[in-house]
Amino acid sequence: LLPLLTMIPFGLGIGLANGVGNLLGAGKPQEAWRLTQAAGTLTLVVVVSYATIVLLCQKLVIHQYTDDPEVEAGASQIWLFLSLDLVCDGTFMFMTGLCRGVGVQNRSAACVFICLWVIGLPTIAFGAHSVLGIWRTLPRLGPCPSCRNSDPAPAVKLHVCLVTGCRGWHWQG
Image 1 (tube, rainbow, N blue to C red):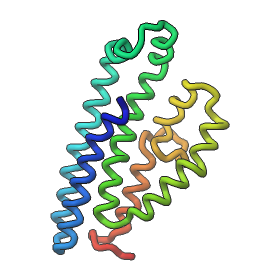
Image 2 (cartoon, rainbow, N blue to C red):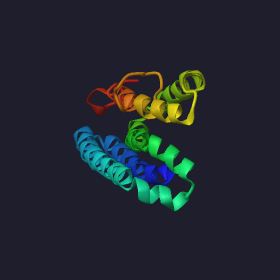
Image 3 (cartoon, helix red, strand yellow):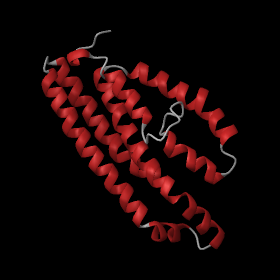
């Protein structure tokens, strides 16, 4: 379910990468910025909408996969966290398109590697001692486990910081 739903913002991010790249290449940074704002708003609405639908359809979705009461109980325990993770992952997938569009994908790749493998894996391995613990950790951390706070999407903020390194939407190397 998660991989399928994250393909929607991923596709929007691909479209944004093409649009922003073309507009910046044509010397139209203000139009690239407007496109980013419009696409970002659309993506946020879409992501929050499908995460809300998934949250509200908890029993229906769970019953599509199992009739086992123990599995149902476990799935019910993680369902809120799964829904929050949909928002984080969807927003992150969209922002990767923006990073590609402005040409900072190398910084994005370094961030993802460090956050997920160097910091995230040990955090999950030593900090989450159950399936519920893993799911409680993931949405709170967002896709960037280095930012352990209550912010739902720190990796998105990191990507925004990377992108805003492009003063006036002209890359400043």
